[in-house]
Image (tube, rainbow, N blue to C red; front, side):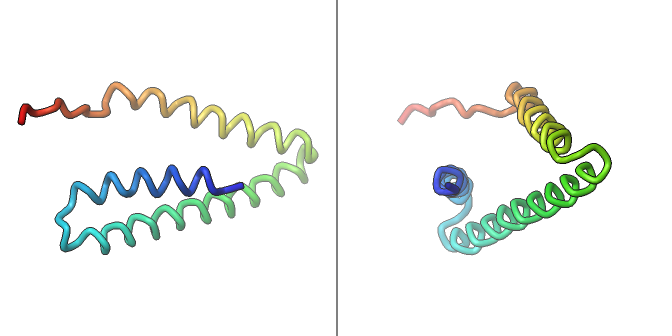
Length: 93
């Protein structure tokens, strides 16, 4: 189930590592992967805690809908960042 996510993450991190010098590429890749794994684990922990908290107040179906709505909203807000992504122009050889 997580394979597409892992492939996308590894692909994105590979591009980031290409920016750094070859001598530190392995270290940078390991650091970025550890930060990514920490973020995923933290997100799962916080999401589980929020689900339990909301479920005790409003019930499980409402708790699920709130968290899905929050996730969809934050994903949609990421589109606002697209204009600020710097796109490198190709340099002539």
